[in-house]
Image 1 (cartoon, protein in one colour):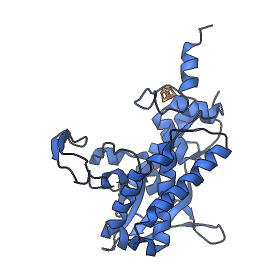
Image 2 (image 1 turned 90 degrees about the vertical axis):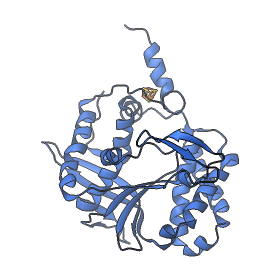
Image 3 (image 1 turned 120 degrees about the vertical axis):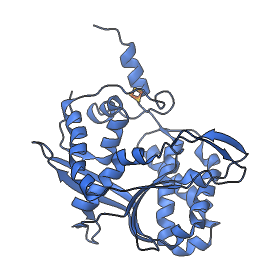
Length: 300
Ligand code: SF4
């Protein structure tokens, strides 16, 4: 079976790059995900809370309100999965406190308080034709902001544990590349009547914002820094990191992004649905039951 569409969501690109076989189960065979981990549901809630506190700017001076907002949006997201018949795995409602703490850390930073949010959770679309076929891509950005120093910055929020954020790793990031291309050549749905508008922007920074960096260390110790392999010493009470990890997509790079994305789309259309075993297989892959059953099936 092949994927016959020519329209790709950002989530398709990310899912395929994470494991082509999991993409196949979900998007080609139409199999229902077996569960969603509660941490993914909290992630959805945190995005909504950040959007809300920037909309209602008074919330920045009332950090006590965050607990209620997190609970409210978590429940809302949980319910939307429940109504679609998807089981939420794990008891998230009793484990929300660290997430509330992360958001309080976010609200305490002057750079976040003073940023002017230009776009939040905004949908985009664009098309590419790097080879013979035209592909249509769609996605949405978390936040486009104007910083106090006048710089323009696109931010993608992450609620999970921080992964490697070396300059090279950030340079490779498909999600940031796709957002950058959309700002440069795509259209955003920002008109009140639902109309689409080209922005033709090249932001000064494209950034991943790891909210977990706002959680202080519970005890002192040392660890290996995933970005440079060096041993770092940390002390109890210190923040876990800088939270904001910046990169850029200058004009020259933007011109090659349609080819990079086109290669992923072409691989999907060719039906290259191989397995990509990774650390998520056992615990977090929502298709591991199908994957295992397929492997255990006797060969005919
Ligand atoms: S269990 Fe691992 S290899 Fe199998 S589909 Fe899921 S992520 Fe891919």
